[in-house]
Image (cartoon, rainbow, N blue to C red; front, side):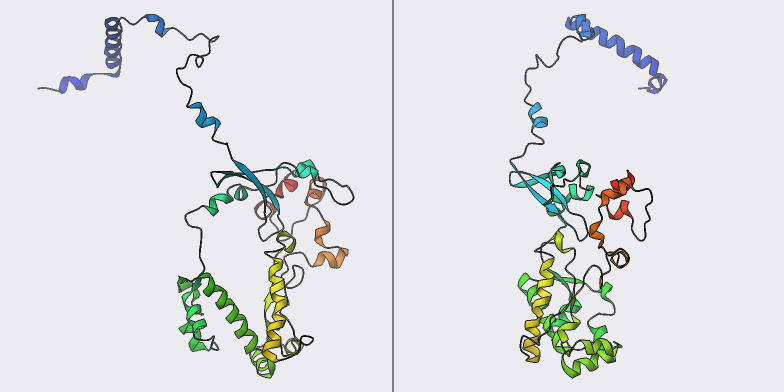
Length: 327
C-alpha cells in the first residue's frame, strides 16, 4: 500500500477531519448541545460532586498529633526556639512560635515583636537531617589513629607518623567502632597525653618541641595543662557545651593520680574562652569599651547610621540575625 499520500496531510486538514469526526460522534450518540455551553458562574460546580473525600488529603496534610518546642542552638551565637509538629511519632515539619514579644527580663523589659520569625532555612529542614539516610548513627575513627591507640599511644617519631598515617590523614579511611570503644579511646588518650607531659620528662619533651620556657614553667609539671578544651557558646547549651568545661576541670583528678599529689596541688586542663584562646568574640571590644559584646543586641543594627563589618558576613554567617542589618 502506498503511504505517501498520508504524508501530504497538513495540520489544517487534520483538524478539519477531527472536527467532522467529533461532530458525527456527537450526533450519533444523541448528546445534547447544552453540554458545550459555558458554565454558569453563579453555580458551585462542587456542590453536586458525587464524592469529595479527596479533599481530606489536602485538609490533613498539615495535621499533627502533638507538638513540642526546642532550641536550635548550633555552635554559634544563635538560639532559635523552634516548634516541632509530630505525627505518628515522627516530626513532620518545623515551625515558629511567634511569641518572642512575650520575652521579658526581671525588670519587665520586653523583646520586640520584630524578632519574629527567627529561624533560618537550615533550621526549618533540620528534621530531614535527623531522618536522612546519610545521618551518622555510630562512632567512626580513623583507621591509622585506632591502630596507634591500640598500640598504646607510642611517641610519634617520623617513622610512626607515616606508619599510622598522621602525615596523610586525608588518605586514610574511617572504621566503625562501638560507643563503648569510643569512650574508652577518649579516656585512654587523655591519660596518655597527661602522663607523657607530666614531671621533668614531660617538660623536656615540651621544650624539645619548641614551647617557650615560661609556658612550660607555668604548667607546674602537670601534663593535664597541655589539654585545652572549649565548651562553645555555653549559655546556648548548658549541658552539652558547659559539659566540656566540667570534663576539663575534672582532669584534676587525673593529675592527682598520675603525679601522686593531693587535691590542693592537682591541676586540671586549660579552658578556652571565647575572648581569649578561641577568639570567636572580638577581644578588642571589652578592652576598649569595658563591656563584652553580649551587652550589644543585633536589633541595634536596625537603627544604626554606621555599621562597620570586620571579619563578619551577616548574611551568610548570621542567617537569623541578618534581617536587622538588611532592614
